[in-house]
Length: 310
Length: 98
Figure 1 (cartoon, rainbow over the protein chains, first blue to last red):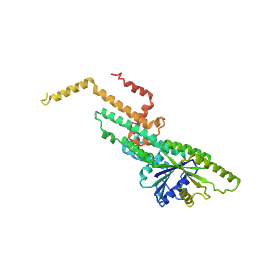
Figure 2: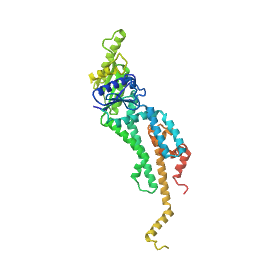
Figure 3: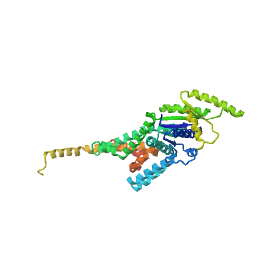
């Protein structure tokens, strides 16, 4: 069974609900489970009615949670760099560089990278401590981009290391020294780049090479979620990430009353059949639409439904 | 002449004489230094092209090495922005002044 599970799907289909229910089910089976929310609009705190922050805390027995705050993470990172500046540079240069750091900390790419970084950190550092790590992700497009990052960035970093090595080797030659591999490896820039590269490779290895990553898509029995899921499944297969399971959430009860609801139910039946046809080689779980709001008390019911089908 | 002045030293001195006369060392060293600085420029471009307006997927990660490159940053930006000086740089490759 895969250690890392990503919950994806169109916005509003109930990813948080399903991933929380799934996490409860894993925890109640005695597996040490970590539930990670990456959606900027965090709501697992609301589901469990407990403040879950940017550090890992225990939600229940066997179940820990964390809500990644991209803004906080990128601030941390940039402050770390700032701290490093004083050790290396003269005050005049520091002033100039600080301006650039300020500009970078508000640039849109930074938050995405910070999120990605924290996810890699969790995968690399926590996968020994937990039996199951469950990611409640932001809507589809975002997540797929996130997963394509290791490949894209890995290539860039490799080029950077190559270029830097070449530059050092030539300047060594200019100083009439023989090429000194030790000195190249000690270069702080090469060191930093290598560390990044290793982290990325490690995460990639866990996620893709060892087949430890599984994706579960959540959808509703409606047209748009079906279409989006189809696209996302195709996109993920390009990255060799299999999607074997789907959860159809919010299924209406059988005995609905009134013309409106009856017609809705008919339509749902039609779409459920379509889902079965399109995704016939995948396992499909069905969760009912709950009367009550999804809160700490009612989430266990859903987890129960899930357990019955798994 | 010092009596310690050996044949070995004599040969070395002749070598130095030719080196100085042909100017070989200065030139090769200069060429290597120039090459090294070009390589550094390329490296900086790959790291901080976003400062010149080219989008870069890596810019968040290259911030981390900024402290080590900051000293050269101003010069580099100046060189990249000022096309005229680039032509000068390229022209000097052909050594018209010698």
